[in-house]
Length: 249
Image (cartoon, rainbow, N blue to C red; front, side, top):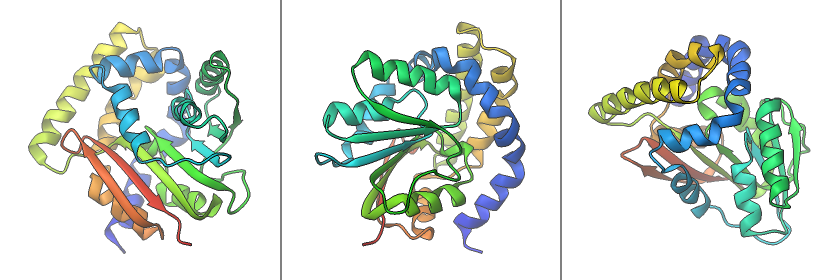
């Protein structure tokens, strides 16, 4: 079995219970302060990460774009700021996060067509979107299923764009990174008075990242699922990865 695909098997064995049972209550708990907590934890770099993500996105008037695991609609709003004629769709399983996202879009006079649903089985037709995006959620997904769905709904030649926390390839950097994240999880939990669901998943968030991909490994996984012209940018020594990949023509 290819290395990227074998890691997917391991990830499912380790974390399926969390993905199926624990994460929805966590994001319901944190929805109201999700963006603020991430600004604090990233030392003010949260919007900088988004700009790097958007730097790889090319838009044209009237394109169809889908943001999966859309959360508070940060990507959809950024896309519409760049090109207001886009038709932007969003899907997320968590009602509370999408409630915040809908409010954020409405405050800006933007229309994002949101669906509450499972991103492992996208409720959209084949070959429909020019752009599909995924930000800050891939660690919590069965990526072999998600990438097959992404490829299905993309038009031939369409692009997939990804941004997430990844596992730094250098062990010393990873050790420092995980130490900082443990501190941040405890600090933001205290600062924002997180509830029991979020508190109980602090160890999971570190373990999921420790068993995740480096930027280059993530590129290999995209290629293993038939994507081409894969490029990536590593931010902060591989702590954050930004990827672009294309569905073959």
